[in-house]
Length: 121
Length: 106
Image (cartoon, rainbow over all chains, first blue to last red):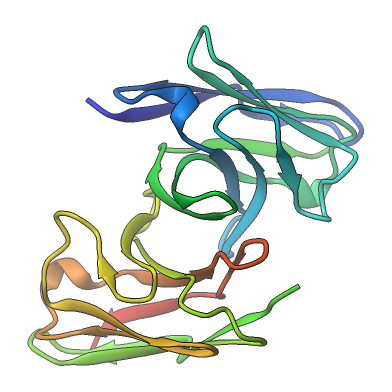
């Protein structure tokens, strides 16, 4: 079965770090770009970061550039998002998503259930 | 960055109605547009990509049209399962979502 399962969310204080993981199964992990999309409470969707299938190219929204790092572990079929210097405005449900489409023209055709990140003092 | 504007923000409709949601891009995105459905406390689900290509398993009452800067999602004969929030997303450069359209029961 094709699925994505996120983990690692939780409550942290401003300035702290958190690492999210997404376990992928049912498809060839290195064949597909992957991404993180977040949704603040009661708000819309915001793309956070995308990584190419090979893992060699990464892209970040301006709101997280320099603070977040996306990576792929092809041996464990796991997508990760290292989040540093967290701010209150980073509070959101973070979804892991598999990309469809062609290089750089990626939409998201499979989503995980999401993991909640809360940043508060 | 390319801005995506959906209208309306909220839409009240009845079962059996035909519903149309519009999404406008701030610049030309060709047909690099996707539509998603999201129900409360659930992950988004891809409905349509490349403006009009229906994803496998999505009912044929959903359809998408448009190119350039103006796009529409139409739901023919609205069903109880269709009450949800719908988002458009451009993937021309880089990736931007519309603010969402909530389809609620009239």
